[in-house]
Image (cartoon, rainbow, N blue to C red; front, top):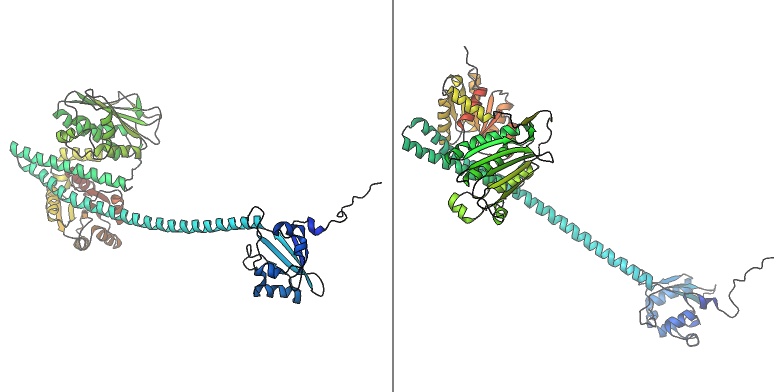
Length: 559
C-alpha cells in the first residue's frame, strides 16, 4: 500500500514567510497588521517593529494625495491597485528598497481587499529589479535603434542628394566634353582640310614641306584632343566598348600598315607575324583594339633609334589573344615601368623634353585593355629594349577557322576601301550625278566641304541652319529634283540637325541624310541614327571617307 506524501507546510511555518514575495497586511489607516520574512530582509525592519507601524509615516511617499486616493479605492470600492511606475508609466510609484549590497531594488506591488468589510488589504510586493533592467536595456536598444534608423534615413537622404549632384555633374561633364569635342575638332577640321586642299595645288617642294608640317602638327593636336577626351570619358564612366565580329589579324595589320611610313623614316625594320594559330574571326571592339596597337607601335618607333620593332600575335593558355610589341630601343628601369601607365606620366622628365607627348596613351590603353577583357603589361631592361604585352578576350570564335604563320591576309577596312577607291578613280565621273545639300553653319567648313565635293565632281547647295535645309530639301522634292545626299551638321543655331532631320522624317522624307558632326563621344552615332540619319561622319573631314560615303549613296550614272 502506497503512502501519500504530505506536501503541506511543516507545523509552525507561515506560508507567507517562504514565498519570494514581500507580503504584508494593512488596515485602512495604513497600519501594518502582518509583515513577512521577505520584507524583513528587504527593509531590515523586524516583524515585531513593523507590526503596528504606519506605512504612511515610515514611507512618506505613500501619504501623497494621489496614492491615498488609489488606496481609498481599495478599501472603499474594493478595487485592486497596482503600483509599478518603474516598469509601467501608467502605474504609481512605490518606495524602492535598497539591498544589503546597496543596490536599489525595484518592486511591483499589488494591493487588494482581504475581507468583505474591506477593513484590511493584502499587499504583495514582487522584486522586479531584473525585469526592470531588462526593460531598461530594451528601451535603450529601442532608442538606439530609432537613432540608427533616423541616421540611416538621413544618410540615405544624403546619398540620394549626392547621387543627384553626381548625376548632374556627370551630365554637365558629358555636355562639356561634347561641346569641347565640337569646338576643338571643328577648327581643327578646317585647318587640316584646307591643308589637304593646298597639297593638290602647290608643287614647290619647300612650300609642300611647310604644308605637310602644318598637317602633321594638326594631326598631333587632334591625337592629344582625342586622348584627353578618351581619358575624361573613362573617368566619367561614359566610354563603352563594343563587341563586334571582326578579324583581329586584319585590325593589327592595318595598324602596322599605318605606322610603316614612320618606321621607314627612322630606318627601322617593322614586321608582324602570327605565332601558332589565332582565330580568323572573333568578337572584340576593332576600333579600340586598333587604338591600343597603334599607341604601342607609335611609342615603340618613337623610342627606338635603330634596329627593329616587331609585333607577334598568338593565343595564350587561357584562350585570349596575346599581342606583343617588341622593340630594340633604349629600354626602361623597373621604377620607370611603374610610372608609364599613370596619366600624364612618362618614364622620366627628359623624355618629355626629347620626345614630347602628354603621357596619356599608355594610361588609356591599359584602361581599354581591361574593358576588352584583358590587360596591358610591360617588361623592359635599360639599353636592351622593351616588350609590351596586350591580352584581350575574343568571345565566340570558330576553332575550325584559324590563321597560322604562313597565312598572308590583306587587311581591309572602310578607310582602306575608300583610299583605294580614290586612288583608282581620282576626281572623275562616279559622283558627277550626285546632288548634295550641305547644312553647315560654319563658313570655313562650308567652303571646305564644298571644295571637297566639287573635287569629286558633285553638285553642292548650302544651307546655314536646319530650318533652311528643311525648306530646300522639301522644295527640291516638289520640283522633282531631290538631293541624293544631305550632309547635315548636327549642331547649328536656330534649328539644329537633329530637329531638322526629325522634321523631314515626320513629313515622309525618305532621302539619304548623313550626320556631320564634330561630336565624337560614345553614343553620338546612335543619337544621330535615332534622329533619322542614315549614316554618320565626324570632323575633321577625311576626304577619302567622304568620297566613300558619297559614292555609297550617289545614283548610278546611266550608260
